[in-house]
Length: 226
Image (tube, rainbow, N blue to C red; front, side, top):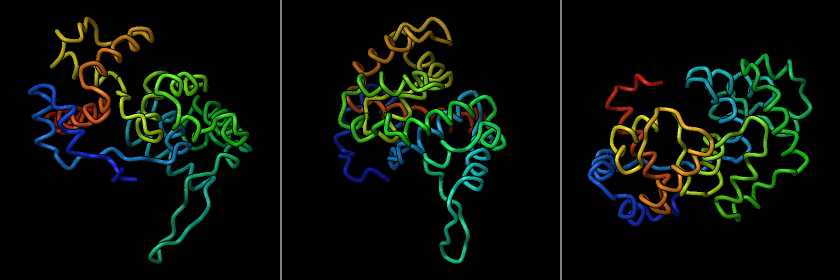
């Protein structure tokens, strides 16, 4: 879960390409990328689209309570994240009751594809970054940013560099000349081109650079972004 197999010293050395990342790495030396369950990660980031942390947290808790198995730990009761089969058999309205709105049909479709093994996460882990991303993006409700999050946090693609409006602002602030950013929003095509430039700059562990930069800037703004 905490990716203990990662060679952190090697990764830090690799991504420390400039004064900005060097500062971020120094300030938050203990920061790590989590390796989550792929299905849970996929559903979580589908829910995250156009939302905020509090709403996402609330929806995931409601979904686990409604569809997940009950478990006990240290005399406390918890609900596990639902299995794909359970969400696949649920109705759209049942899923909507968890506060996910229009994303309910995307969640049901992703669960159905996973339950029917149309999505093979183990295969995606072994695939190249681009092949895995192309396949993930075939799932309704999954665009570039959601795909990159799933690839980075559950499918071992450490070159993934998720780009949302916050990361675009960070890149515009610190790297506008290098990446030639002209707007605060980007098209799907521009996303791909920018991602290639980012990986060319930060290297095969670009995802770690993304996490350090995001953490540094969010703390600079006292977490007022989200």
